[in-house]
Image (cartoon, helix red, strand yellow):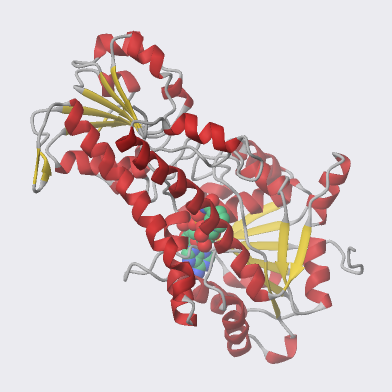
Length: 458
Ligand code: NAD
């Protein structure tokens, strides 16, 4: 039942990266008055000027429309943010710590303390970043230390499930909203903050399930969902490993088991594995937190999930050596004197995000083995160049393939899926292709004279 009493609150999003900027823009589109805050002045200047600093389909147009309508502004000032909003969503990064396991909460800490010091009236601070369970309680303590006590500032948690590439749709039309709250007031404020989402659903004859729960559950929902998704991918990649030695075809296997609705066919594509700014770091941080809490054994399988995932990257290197007729020594294969085209640098299509991208990791492995690697990606070139400056980047797919002894398709962009193998065959020096995402029509490529290798396929 919707709680009543809260008027339409003014919303601030602290941290305007993939998560926060998308939210700020989409909630302005839903009619809210919104302020986006970030410590990165260049990012804020871009957003305020009408340019989304990353690639996300549909977002540019919504940004410009809502800036023009005056519902959306951006700032680098904590005081302005504190004065403006009733509800403050914390959307800052929570990267992997330098020790490789737990989450780095220093950005959360600085955003919360920076904001809390400037608050002058009652407000709600809502965590949205992905964090270790227990963070909401810790934020309550931080707020207690840094905000004037008489304001009665409250904290809540609302994990985020958006997928890059579908982010606008996922924010406007989420498949659920989960909130962790301690009071009726926080519940009412969060309901009012999402009323635009519920209203949109009602006009489209849909319902958005709302789960109201405690802090710990709300925090755990996110990492549990990511752990499940990572496990599903590593499960099918483990089946790919078995298919490779048994002579089976994992794509047929996945299709066959996926017809069982208890299993389902989504997120069941074997390939070069998962990456990005979320799944890898989240499953490691989840293990580290469980360990701290004394439940390390419960999540030991996630270590295996991680290892299966990373093994897929070396599998591509192994396939490359096989196709190029190179022997592997104790230090791995020697690919010197070969030219390899890597198609795809982002961790998935329709994004420019290269954080922990399997494609770039494989490109680096190939280069380390001595290959002359030429990379092309439709959207991720700038980020890829910054992340891996030593590789060669080409302005088009044709330029990357020209003169290549081997082509590796490592991100399933539509441009690559729909590429003409006959035309590409005329550019390549050798017609050898590794389909790291099992996204090509193998019959078509083979017919065009290519030696084809997929992942977990004969
Ligand atoms: P991002 O790196 O794109 O953005 C983080 C932003 O926070 C940056 O713009 C940075 O400048 C800013 N920032 C750092 N310190 C700040 C401070 N003190 N005050 C204000 N801003 C500050 O990261 P992202 O992908 O948007 O992820 C943010 C969080 O959301 C992470 O916890 C992530 O796990 C989670 N998440 C991300 C996605 C996704 O698809 N990207 C989905 C769900 C959850």
